[in-house]
Length: 342
Image (cartoon, rainbow, N blue to C red; front, side, top):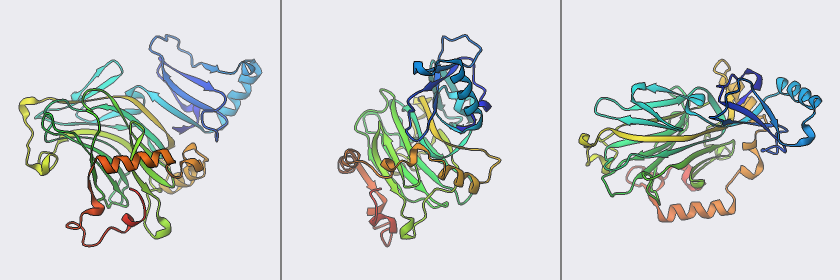
C-alpha cells in the first residue's frame, strides 16, 4: 500500500521489518507487515537487516526520511488489517489465520478491502467449497464504482460432487464486460488452499493461479481500445447462490440439504498504490502512474518466455470457453481478440 508510514496504526501483534537491500529495486526502502502472534510489545520496532545500519544516527536519518516519503508496503497480513465484512457479518468465522465465509438458505456473504488501489498485485489463498457445490459462486475480484466502472473478476462456479470446478474470468472496462473465459482447474481446489492473484499495471492485467498466468488483458490503447488505468479499485470477495446460471447453464440447482457452503481464505496480500478516497481519480491516476512503482518495471510489461509457455499450456489443455470464439453470441469478433493473448 502506498501511504506515509507514520500514518499507520498497527495492531500490537504486528511489526515493521526494514529490508535492505530493497525488495523492489526501484525503491530505496521497502517495508513489510508481518504477523507476529507471540509478540507482546506495544512498540513499533524497526529491525535493520544490515549491521552497517545499526547506529543510532542511521535510525534518525531513516526515521526522518520515512516521515517525508511514500513507501511501498507489501502486506501479508491478518484479514482485519486489510479487509472488512460488507455483507452478512454473521456468516463469517475465524480459524487461526483462516477466515471462513458461508452461504446458507438465508444469505450469502462478502468482504471488501478497507482501501482502494491503482496498479500493483493482489493475492489471496482460497480453499473452495467442498462436496456438492452446484449452484454456488465464490468470487474474488477488483472493482471501481459507478456505471462506467472497471472490474477484474475471478468467479469459481460450483459443480456436482466429482465434477471439476470451473473458473470464469471477466474484464469490465468503462462498464462494459462480456469478456468471459472459462477453464477447468488442473487440481482439486477444495482440498487445500491455492493462490489466486491479479497483477495490474499500465501495460497489462494478468490473472494467475498459483503464479501460473491463466489470462492476460493487454493495453491496446494504440489500437483505439480503452484500457482500465484511470479508476482506483477496491478488492472484494463474496459467496452467493447463482443456480439460475452457474452450473451447466442453470440446469443443476443448489441442493440446500448440503448447506452451509463454506469457502476459506488466508494469505491476504496487497502490494500497490493506495488511493485516498478524498482524492479525485484523475489525481490518483497521475500519482500512481508516475510513482515509479515496482509494477511498472519494464520486465513486467509483458509475460516472460516461461510465463508465455504456461499460458499456452493452460489455454490448450484447460480452457473450455472463450468469448472471442463465440460466433453465436457476437456477430463479429470483438476488436481486442485479434491483438492479444487474453
